[in-house]
Image (cartoon, rainbow, N blue to C red; front, side, top):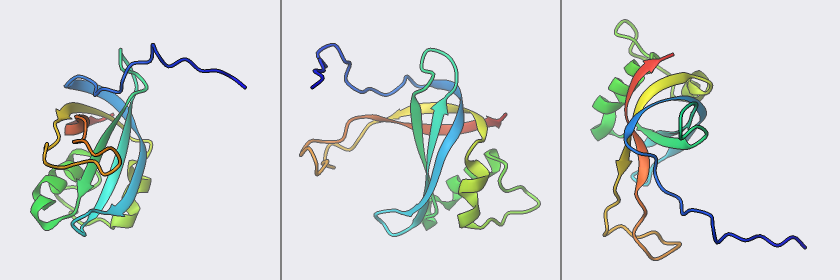
Length: 135
């Protein structure tokens, strides 16, 4: 049996808030806890000190989020001022493999929201603040 020593392995931590270049490696249609359609997006950082790390984004189709969703879809060039319609099911195929320049932010969790698995508040995590460019 192989023995593994994890004593020198760092705890997971978010990448610093900054501008990054990455590739959308995964986009999955789902439903949020509030019952709204959403797409969970994984962006793998493609260069620099944090190359290989993944930043997550959720594109929400909740009525209260649609203004931000519209901005995101325009930034990603999957809709345009001339054509504002898109089929939700088509988005993952359009997004996966897309190279993007984006700003990552660190999203602090609400201390009142508890992770059911650990009984503790969620750790801070990365999220996309803005998409700057499709490369």
